[in-house]
Image (cartoon, rainbow, N blue to C red; front, top):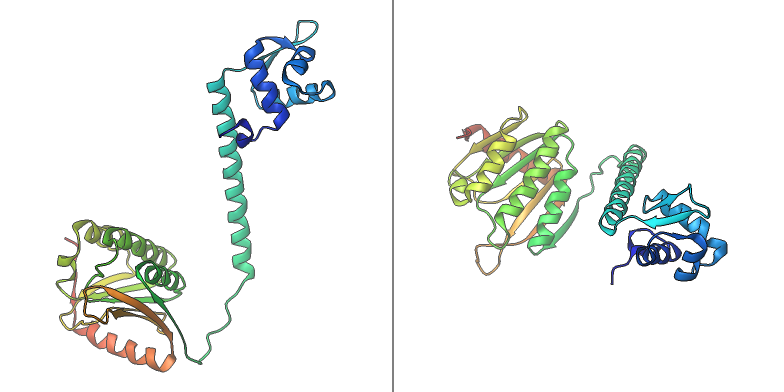
Length: 268
C-alpha cells in the first residue's frame, strides 16, 4: 500500500500528520501521546512538518497548538516537492553526462575489421539507433522496403529522432530509396521524414529503381546491413554491423554512383 513515506516523510512525521488529522488542533504534548511519537522528538517532527507546509501552528496560544493542512493540499505539496527534487536530480545527472562527455574520448578508428550482429526486431532497431547516434560526419541510408515485423510508425519516429539529432550536430544525411518505398509506408511515417528532415540543408533525399537492399553507411567506415529472413518472409531477420575500411570503401563508391543517377525527392 502507498504511504506518506513514499512521498518523503519519515515514520514519525507520517504518524504525527495522520494523528493531527484525527485530533484537530492540539498541543505537541497531546500529539505525542496520540501518535506514539516520543516527546523528545515531537518538536523536531512538527518543525519538519511545518517546513513541508503540512501543518500550521497557532503561536499566540500557550501552549502552542498545531493543526494539519487538508489532505488534498498536503499531498499536492508533497508531490510538488518530489517533482522539484526529481528535476534537480535530472539536471545534476545531465551535468554529470556533459562533464563525462568531455572526459571520455573514443580512440582513433583502427584498420582491423570488426563486426557484430543483432537478431530480432527490437534488438535490430536498438543496434541501428546506437550506430546512428555515433555518426560524426555522414550518414547514408539506403532503403528498399520497410520491415514488416516492427511497428512502422514507432520505428520511423525513433529513427527520425536520431537522424534529426545527427542533422542538428552537423552530420550530413543522405537518403536513397526505391521510388515506391514511400508508397508502401503509412502516411504518418512519410510525414516524419518530410516535415522533420526536409528543412535541414544538410539533408538530401533521392530515389533510384536500382535499390535492392537496405543498409546504413556511417562516416564511410561502418555499415549496418539488413539481413532478410532466410525463409523469404517479408521481414528483417537481423542486422550486421561491420567496420571494415576496404569493404565500406567499396560500398561508398557504389552508393556515390547510384546517388549521381538518382532523382531528387521533393517534399509534397
